[in-house]
Amino acid sequence: MFELRGDGPLAGAVREEIPAQMLCESDSPADAVYEFGNINIPSGESVYVGAYRVGKGWIYIDDKYLPSLISMEAGRMHVTVGCRVDLLGKPGISALLKPVDHAYNNVWGRISKRFYYSIFNQTSQLYQLAHGQTYCHASACTDGQRTVLLMAWGGVGKTSSLLQLLNSSESWRFISDDQAILDRKGNVYRTPFRMQIYPYNLEGEDRLRNALMGRRSIFDKAQWQIRQGLMGKKSVRRRVQAEEFLGAGRGAASAGVTHAFFLRRTGGMEFSDHSVSTEDLALQMSHVMQYELGMLGNLLAASTSVGSRDEGFGFDMTIASELDSVADIVRDGLDHVRAQPRLLDVPFKAQPADLLQAVLARID
Image (cartoon, rainbow, N blue to C red; front, side, top):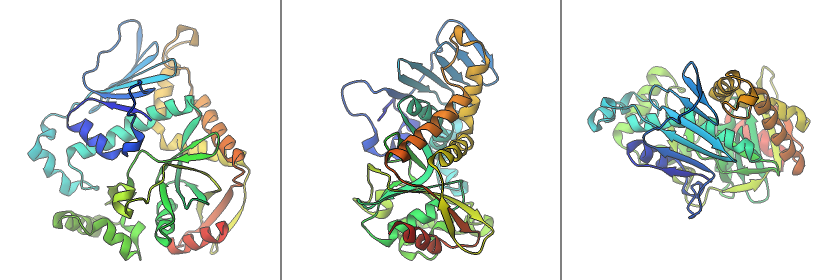
């Protein structure tokens, strides 16, 4: 749970992305606050490292569009986000961007996505690791009895498998599409992001394609078809909330993992799987997350390299300790629920329906 503060078009676009249940609504202050507005850099000693300015307990990021100040104290985090979008943010010009954007976003939708991928993912991971949970590059869903966690590198088939499961029965409910949240007790929590759907995720699934595109404008549909035809199926996508896409009640807030898979595409002709230790799988996932949250590594490198720990600059975390924390949480979580993870080899040419059958055969 975290709190969003501030007004303006960027703050509005960010609020549209986040499910309401993830925002702090109590009167007590949230432990993680994102505030959109003017930045006041603290006084006192600081060190400049490229685009970073590192002080004692805070780091300023001189981002081209979203300069940000991150401060951490006593387990609480406060991130102030500025905005350098002027002429492009004007209503008329903002709308002109939509036909050429791969997700049919206007300027503020595009900038809010930059906020998530450049600021939010990295800073929220810092906060999570301090509180015993972590992002996993995984899709997840539950039917109340079984909760499936599908971990993998990008492009292996997580989202396609998730959609196939969700479409196979209305008892399955969405938890995460790309960045699942896992804690030390093996609970997986609702992702703070919309689902991200590409044309190849919908191949052979007319019902899902109609659910995604059926009520969109003629211009939106035309952009989907034209961009796909000109630039390929990876050049266009739509971002949508699970309930908007799948229907009311098709999302779940959290569930305990019962089945965990690490998917990998291979040159083989058949599906195959074997058990993998939670320690090995956790190590794999820590390095996948290091890749996925690459800018977090840059942030921690800046934090660590400016001086000795005794000087108190930056944050009390290094790249090495971040990797260890991710691995420890994943291992402890899967051990706690005795998930007995499997390494599932997926033939390179396997279709989403084939992957669905392979997963179902291993969870029934």
